[in-house]
Structures are given as C-alpha cells and as structure tokens.
Image 1 (cartoon, rainbow, N blue to C red):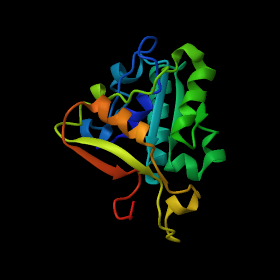
Image 2 (image 1 turned 135 degrees about the horizontal axis):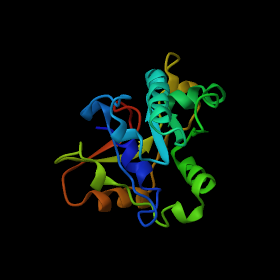
Image 3 (image 1 turned 30 degrees about the vertical axis):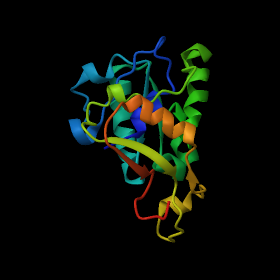
Length: 187
C-alpha cells in the first residue's frame, strides 16, 4: 500500500488546497481518456520506484494534455537517480520528500503549506483496516546492484514526533511500521 501520497498530501494546507490522492496499483492506470482525474488540479505530484520513470513521464503527459497549465512535480527513486535528466520533463523535481514545502511555497505561496504536518490518511481509500507508518528511511545495506545505495542517502530512523503525527492521523487501528525502502534491514 502506497504511503508516499498520504505523507506528501500532509504538507498542503487543508484550508487553502483541495487534495485528491490516486494510487494506480489499487485503482488502475490513469489514462488520457480519464480527463476528470487530471483536468482539475493546478499541480500533480507524482512519485514512484526507479522502474517507474517512464510511468512518471506518461502521467505528466496525460496531465499536461488534460490541463496545459498544470504544474508537474516528480520525485521518488527515479528522480533521485536522474535529477538533472528529470528537470527536462517536469516543472519541479524533488530528491527528498520535504522539498515539497519549497515547491508549494514557490508555486502558490506560503499560505498553501500546512502549518502543521498532518498525513492525509483520510484520503487514502486504498488503506483499509491496517495502518501503515513509515519508521525509517533509506536502506542500511550497501548492495552494489541497488539504486537505493547508488543515490547515497543515509539510513535514518524517523523522529518520535513524526511517528506520532502519523499514528494520530490514521486513528485507532492496528499499525504496521515499515522501512521506507525495504523490510529486511535491522531497523
């Protein structure tokens, strides 16, 4: 179950922004023939695994076709691995989740940034009974074949405040804590 949209949505002001989340794994591919999904937003924020770079390009093209003024923001492993290359295709490229604050400020102004980070579990229609909380980021292994190691980000445990924000936002339910990128580490 994708958690990045839930977390990224938490950086946008609920007072000033209408936020919708979409998860292609659970709801099917967004295509150009679904204009109701892509024609309304001022900004579309996309994230994905390294193998999803072409998919980021597809969705960006669909969004620009449905609404030529839409701002496209791309992130995730693909953009971290190819940051300068990515700049040719997207309006904003983020190599870290927290950069979304800078994007929001630049595109719309500081009023559109949530004054308090609140993950948007309320919009995550694909997350049912079990709650998911991101307890660590990046990988503690150094496998030579892996793109996670290649981008050079340090393995990092999330702060207690960050975990509490996630748990409060998801409400009372069983919670599965996971590492952002892999489940086999000692984190």
